[in-house]
Each structure stands twice: as structure tokens, then as C-alpha cells.
Image (cartoon, rainbow, N blue to C red; front, top):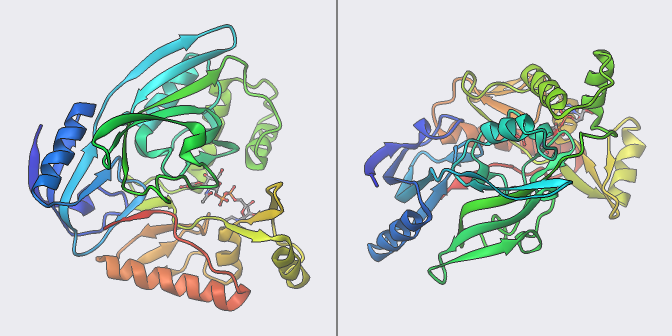
Length: 340
Ligand code: EPU
């Protein structure tokens, strides 16, 4: 295993910002995870775990510890019956390559999560979701190195504590577990409506009435290509903000001022309001703030157009958060994690 020193994090994060990591290790097996972690701690170094760098923000001061890049491969069918196939994935697998393989196998469950940048091991952390599917729907369990007991554990879906863009891995157990693999149970039944609104609209516009995994994947790829900037061309981390969850009374209050506000009933007394809508209504669509561009096709996305530092990003972020707070009395939240 290679350990490199003084590695610019901007080369390993899709936002293309951030100073150097003091050390960076690439790990390819669960054992390497454990050994690298133990050695780092023995030398008093903190450890930050990085997948594809597509949902993390690095700071100007970089990281004064060891960044562990997870490169663990693996795609193995571990169970198969009439209705479903269960697959174990190495945490380092490229997520979209995994989606493509499962679609080629005519399996359903993650086809709407096509073209999401990053690694498989990153998906449970913030319960990645798109176009009506989220990883919590198909994930059975994860295997992880438990840094607090120096042992490997299996955690069930229930133990992962999933909710909207959240899990125990960024909540109460942040930093405790290093995911090495995950198990997904996928269905052999072709995708079934009802589909996510934007997806159904695309299918209708293209007169598509036959729904296969590949058709849904291709539709999602086309929708995303049109709405979301490609991070390899325009540096970004996908949604920079989470959508906003409000209680009924707050939605009613907002509706009295903004009758057309979009809101999705979460079925638990809460409603999800697209944060992109708040940012757009507050007049920030397409704006360039401190080198960061509010994407004109979805205001939830910030593109690093000419920002040169994390400080620029923070100034842009605070301006957006402050404007939404002053306009709507809503506190919006950043989605990507920060390397610290
Ligand atoms: N909207 C606006 N203005 C905007 C953006 C959205 O008015 O600038 C409103 C519109 O009413 C639109 C609705 O929001 O109909 C929903 O927009 P969209 O379908 O584009 O989805 P989103 O809520 O903005 C979420 C995810 C995306 C995911 C899409 C599709 C989060 C934080 N983001 O975005 O995930 O691709 O749904 O499922 O939940 C990501 O996390 O990186 C990401 C791209």
C-alpha cells in the first residue's frame, strides 16, 4: 500500500478546492483499512475517509492527518432466487459502473440512481437518492471496520438509521465506522410506475410506455445531463444544499405568502420543500457569488467557476443562506461533508 505526503485535496474533490492532506493512503482490502487506521492512530494522526470526493468539501488549510482513499473492489452475487438477486459490493467500486452492471443484469432498485458520481461506499453515508429511489430502499447491510473496537462488524439497514440524506454515519456515529462493503437486494421485476414527476414527464414526452431498467437508466441520464453540471467539466458536488423539511404549520405559513410553493408530503407530519425553489425565489438563480455560480438549471447546485479558496465558497454559501433566511425565515443546510 502506498502512502503519499502533502497531496493537494483539490485534486481529489470534485469541487476542486482545498489545501494539502499531510498523508494520503490508498487502501484496496479491508485488512489494509484496519492496518492503515491502527498505524495512523499509533502515530497520533487523525484519519479522514474519502471515496470519490464528489460529496465532500476540503478546506484551505487542508487536512493535518491521514486521508484514506477507499479503493476496495468487488461485485459478487451472493444470493439469487425467483424474485431477487443480492449483490455484495466493494466500497471502492465506481457507483455508476455498479448501476450499469445491475441494469445489464435486468435488476431493478438502483436504475434511477444512474450517473451519480462517486463510489458505492459513499452512498449509505448520506443515503444518496435520486428520481424516486434511495440507497436505503435496497441496502440490506454494510460491512465496516469499527475504529472504536478495532474489529469488523456487519450493520443491518435498521442499524444504519437512514432518513432523508442522512444516516448514523454522518450523525451519532460519524467517524466511527469505515465502510468496506455493502449488500444490495435487487428485484427481478421491471420498474413500475408511479415514477418521480420529472421522470414521468420525460417518459411521456418521449411516448415511452414500456418500462425496463435500461429505459429508466437512459431517461435519468438524459434528465441529469440536461439539469446537472458534469463535475468533470464544471467543478461541483451535486446538490450543495439539502432540501428543507418543515412541519405543517410552517408550510401553511409559507403558503399564505407564496400559494404556489412546491411541497412533498413525507407522510409523517412533515413536508419537503425544494431548497432550489427558495434560492430561485430569493433571486439568486444564475448569480456568480465569490467565484461560485448558482446553477441556472437547479439552484441547489453551486459550481466552482472561479473560486480559488474555501473562503470564497464560505462567503458565497453564507450569502445564500442569509438571503433565504431573511426572505423566508428558513434555515437551509449544506449537504456535502467537510474534511476536518
Ligand atoms: N425547484 C425550483 N428551482 C430550482 C430547483 C428546484 O423551483 O432551482 C423546484 C421545482 O419545483 C422542481 C422541484 O424543485 O420541480 C424538484 O427539483 P428536482 O427534481 O430538480 O430535484 P431537487 O429537489 O432539486 C433532488 C436531489 C438531487 C436529485 C433530484 C432528483 C437533494 C438534496 N437533491 O434535487 O440529488 O438528483 O432530487 O431526484 O435531495 C444530489 O444530491 O447531488 C442530487 C443531485
